[in-house]
Image (cartoon, rainbow, N blue to C red; front, side, top):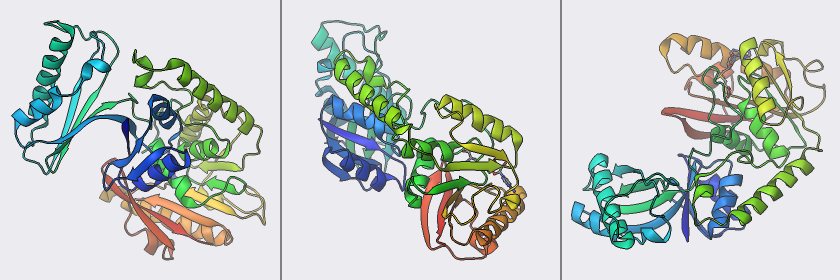
Length: 377
Ligand SMILES: C[S@@+](CC[C@H](N)C(=O)[O-])C[C@H]1O[C@@H](n2cnc3c(N)ncnc32)[C@H](O)[C@@H]1O
C-alpha cells in the first residue's frame, strides 16, 4: 500500500529522513505536502506513533487526472471502498483544490460523496448508510488536475500528542517544536536551555527525543478503530515503544528552561506531568536578562539555547519583540561557547540581536511566516 506522511512547508525533508531511518520502503520526499512511502498497516501505525514532524499519515486509495466532475465521480466510484469500509462506516469527506480546473472544494466533496455512496450501494445492496461505525475520514486533494484520494489514518493531527491541554501566549505546535530541536543540531548528551519556554513545548519535545519516547505513545489513531486493522500487531508496536521509553527514562536529561511569566511556568509544569516527565526538567520564573553562567547553568559547560521569543507580528508588540531579540543577543554574549537558535517572525531580529545568523530556515507557524536562525558559538 502507498502512504503519504503529510508535513508542513519546510518539514518534508525531515519527515522523509525519519521514514528512511525507520526502515520504510520506497520513501520519496514530495515537492509539497510531505513524503510518500510503501508498506502495510503496521508500518503506517509505526509512522503514526514515531514521526515527530509529520501532521498525518494518509492511505492513498487512488490517484487520477480529472478535469470534469464526471471524471471525478468515475474515479472515486472505481475505488473498492468496500474492501476497507464496513457497511456502517462513517465517511466524511474533506477537499482541497489548488491550480486545477475543479476549484470548488464543496462541489468536490458533494460529488465524491455521491460516488462513494453509489459504490457502497452496489457492494452492500443497501439504499441508505447509517454512518454510525468507525470513522474513515476521506481526504481529496486536487493539484494541477491530479486527484489524490486518501484515507486519514491519524484522526486528530499528530501535533496533538496529548500532553498539552492548556495554551499560553502563542504556543508552538508540537511538530514544529520537535523540528526546531532536530534542526538545531543538539545532541542529548549536551545541555539544552530554553530562556523563554512558555508552556514548555520545546523542552518536552527535546526530552522525548533524548529519552527515546514515541511522540504518539499515549494517544489513539483513527486507524485503530478500523475493523480491517491488525490490532495485535499495533499493540505489540506500542508495547515496544513503551519499553523503549522505560529504558530511556533511566538516562540523564540535560534539559531546562525559564520564562518571565509565572503563569506560563505553571502551565509548563502541568504539561511536563502530563507528558510523564514530572521532576525531570528544571523550570524557573526568570527574566532572560538574569540567566547567568554558574547560577542557572553550570559554568564552563557548552550547550544549545533554543528560543521562541515573542513574535512581534503586530505593530504594537514589535517594539517588545525587538527588545527581547536584543536580550537574546546579550544572553549569547554571556555564553559565548553556546549555540543559540531563535524562531521568530521578526524580520528585524538579526539587527537587534547584533549578529548575522550562521544559518536560516523558513517555516510557517499557522499562517505566520517565520525564520529559524542559528547562531553558532
Ligand atoms: C511565543 S511565547 C513562547 C511559547 C512557547 N514556545 C510555548 O510553546 O508555549 C514567548 C514567551 O517569551 C516570554 N518572555 C518574554 N519576554 C521575556 C524575557 N525578558 N525573559 C524571559 N521570557 C520572556 C513570554 O512570557 C512568553 O512565554
